[in-house]
Image (cartoon, rainbow, N blue to C red; front, top):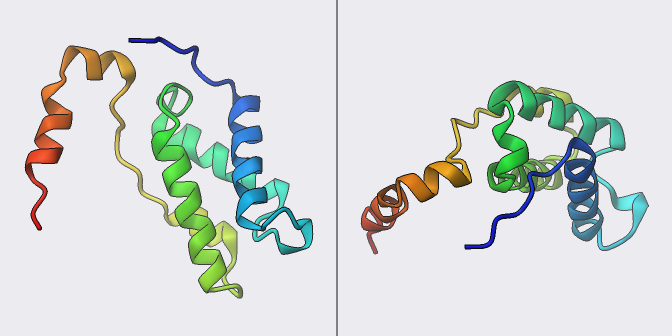
Length: 113
């Protein structure tokens, strides 16, 4: 297993900025969320997830992409209201995943086609 250092708040901002840029096809005029929105989103993550959002950015990124998708489908929607409605539950940190590998297997076991 390769252990990576936790992301800093600045790393998270850059990561989300790049995701927003890709979603907008590199055109700043097509950004669905201003920099202020990314900062508000990260503040919301910090309040909901605590330090885990630095250690396991998976949920942070997943919810951010979902936010961009909703804004894309509903351009008249205020991003501030959407950010306030995001309800991410506790995430499994890397140390917890090593200590309890069965959790991931349980998720896979519940998959039905």
